[in-house]
Length: 401
Image (cartoon, rainbow, N blue to C red; front, side, top):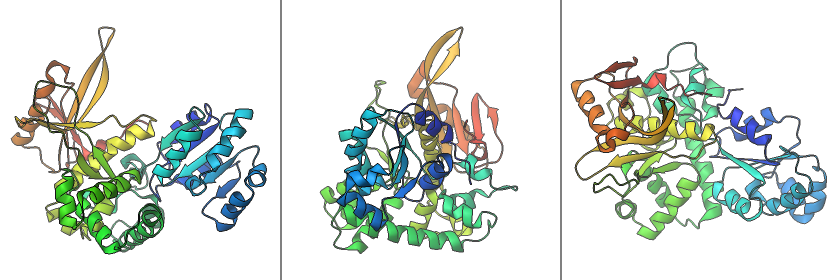
């Protein structure tokens, strides 16, 4: 069992709310984790036809078996579950009584907002964080291999000691995309031409780390802008992509308003781009964008694992000042708590150059006195301070558990 950094958050929520909700993309490890943490509870998969038929035909009889609690996996497959759970927990509000999981976040959250507000503690589990992956290997991990494999747990539980093999995870991504389109997408939208939708996803992968232009994306895919927006919404709410919004505070500059598109898993993005081995990735023009994607999503995972909303952004203005990541932090100074802006520049190169120093200094200029100590995360192996900037190796992204 791979230790998941979200574990303390799930345990904390289970001691506070009568229902614990865990959402996230398919194969992110939700079922494995909740069954490990709450192994004393009966487990029911609503993907099973017999269980689902029982629930639809005789919902009260179905739930009578679980008056002391249960784990309901893929809960969005039976939307009425949330209404019935509302009545059950209103009569008995024991904390941690029920656990519900769902990979189609849009369906799950719609049911929760209607029925379970104030009764459920929600969490979001994305694929493995770097500290979780690092713990699996006794020897060092190559950056390009790491970007190529991504973070889905199944890849590491099956061949975790074989860093050189690319067969298993390439086949796994192919199967994953087929399953995603056939089981999830077809349930939500009427996709007449699967090939067009597949092309749309690949075009999104080619834009990871870039400003989103929906009109241009839709035009290249050969669909209308409205359909492109709808398909993007499906990819976002099923946690395949993440849209990073610009920082909204006004620092007297004309700001870029479009979000930046990021794939949640670099391995899946690389597979969609046709990158099949680390040698190809090392010279590929998308390597820098994939590295930026990796660093941004690592921060996103950390916010979710701590049970916080993803309050991360980027900054770009018309004067060319930009920061790849921006988020608010608190610092203690002379017994006072002050709010600062952490700005982060991201570069995939393994060697710190004078240009990196200039970029690092420029990234926090817009924030003025509100800027925290400048930070640049890069593809090298050593972390150090230079010219007042913290240069952080990708290997040292060891967030607190």
